[in-house]
Length: 228
Image 1 (cartoon, rainbow, N blue to C red):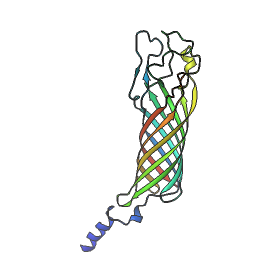
Image 2 (image 1 turned 90 degrees about the vertical axis):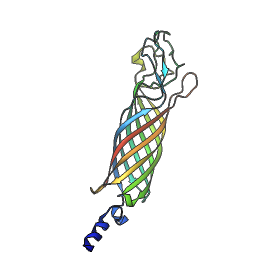
Image 3 (image 1 turned 180 degrees about the vertical axis):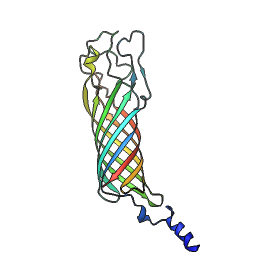
């Protein structure tokens, strides 16, 4: 009986040897699938504004976020990764309530930047992992920045836009990002599961007024990581 009780204690996750539950490190792939939204923006009438009023919004509607990161753990704590991700924005155009008339448009037929569009990120990031071996957990902080491709165009402020078709296209911007991940070591070799919370700022277009309309964003997603 004493031997049996001793074996139970030794096998308990909270009492096991820390080395048995170290989160694997090395080259890895990590996938994310979750929710995305931006803060601020304008919800506007697409064409005829004569009977409707554009209004500022606190945030866009929740939309999908998909991401894939390729990375390398350099030490037990520090790593680098390249994140490819796309988030979708619904109901939050770039601009403000004063930004109505585009060059060449009739005041009653105002064409504004699209309020539904996608943001595709290509972000190099540095990661730092804090291990909590007794709980088989890791807390990972990450920060970086890179390129953002916006589709449909969020940068139409300097164009003579007269039709919705002319407001479509793509534009490239810079962004900065930071996030926090919770990692949990599974019993499957090389697999780590967790959750990511990331936010950042797309350095958006400068309008005709000279004001820069940046895009703060947030993504929340479960994540699966496989270490080779």
